[in-house]
Image (cartoon, rainbow, N blue to C red):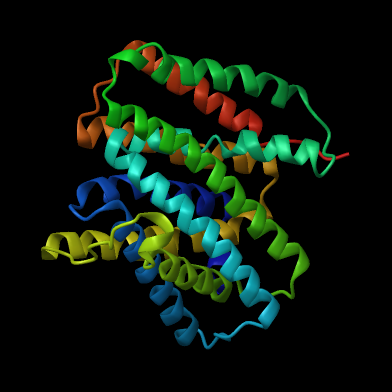
Length: 295
């Protein structure tokens, strides 16, 4: 949207990071299952983009090549959301979001191994920081955790892998397809993601109950979809091309950091000094891993 481009990109990126930091809180506040909450997120978000495109008189349709990439990216995003939402229900939005954001380490590693990007001191420092952070957050008390909590940690780490696939497919789409309106492309990704999530056999053996029991759940899911899936990512994708990667990585660190803080403030997550140190080290690793210089 043109008016967003007139706003200071740094302010936009901060606002976007703050908005999506509430994603996990919205998931945790609903009583619907993880697949259903993911489905409503992308469905409401997709329709929000549809309305935006209609109001701004932008092109709704995209070419076949972009449609293929939207379908591929949507598949990765569906798997990512299903694991992340499940992780949130087991271990809370703060830790689930931090674990999911370790995708930056995987992205940096793939960049080095596959795209021949130059390895840096930042990445060398990021790996041990990440290991230390995870150990302090979940390793010390591993045997004290319930099976569900341990499963939630595993799902959080799988989220990082799935999120990496999502970002790689999105990156490939942006560089190998005809340019399309960003809002239209994200809209189609959202709709494809919703389609995948609605097929029970892909993510779990039993049919998913998509029924929303009360108006509170409906309102939370609506806000979650429109605010986080649509508006949050729209302003982030608008701001990112205008900001150097190192600064963008630092600003986007607000998302997992604030998610952890919201978890403590709003959901009463019990957090001791060891967990705080672990979270700080993990966030430091996420930032360092987000910047890998090219040759």
